[in-house]
Length: 170
Image (cartoon, rainbow, N blue to C red; front, side, top):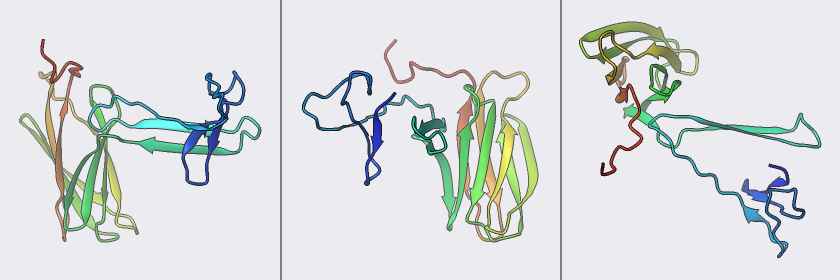
């Protein structure tokens, strides 16, 4: 889209001054806020970038996760982000832990259980890339728990084929 303006309040609007801008000129001269519509799966990220047509070095980039998967415990947070459509691959982040300490990721799916060692950085954060599938199964539920000295947040998510009609009458 061309003609997008970022206001002082951070709202994106369509200047709409010419037919080429935002594809819908606003004859009243008022700028209309741009509404984005997403149909996210649980944990699915959306990546947006806005680049100035006059100065390509001027950019705004954001990542949104409208339906986050997270667990919290005593100030610590665990997040799972879907990296593939069927959640075969996930990105797990853990924050709020003591800096530079050892911890463990306890993962479970079907009969598979793994205890994966980890270590936080100077800011008390760590992350993990994880394959969620289990041989012999096309879908399942994964649980992840981080075992730290002060907290142990956990979360769970389903992986496998996405049912786009979930909740709708067949």
